[in-house]
Length: 169
Image 1: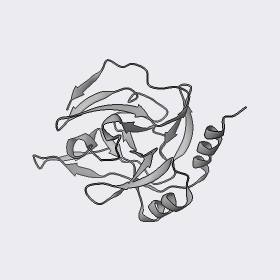
Image 2: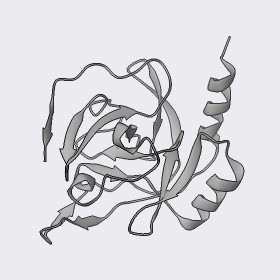
Image 3: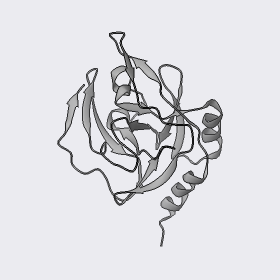
Image 4: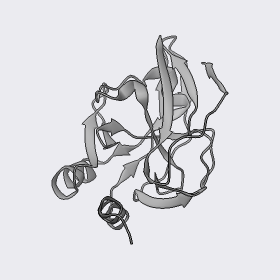
């Protein structure tokens, strides 16, 4: 028997949420950091390594960061060259805010762009990862004095496996 929260969360996959690509970002030194863009499409629920996770239209797992628990965005500048924000088109932002349950939402980034959230936390894809993978799950890193621990946006199937890798970029 399927748990009630899983059934309502799986409905997310049926709703089209436009995700815009994150192009390039300038870090504090003024150099341009290129991110791996994700194509426009829908956020869906996929099974990856036994976990039900949110994925972008390219099939890449979406992640949240512990440092952004309060809904404040800390992943900016160089961070976004590794963790690409799941940006929402203006129409998708209105749709997400008006039609979906409280697990999916939208937040405004410091640059004014709309970013999708899951359970109040901003969503990102890991630029170093291919589709159908969980390499970023449990990953830790530090940017601009903030420590991040990344978790797959899991709708079911357990939490992050312990990871010993990470780094200060």
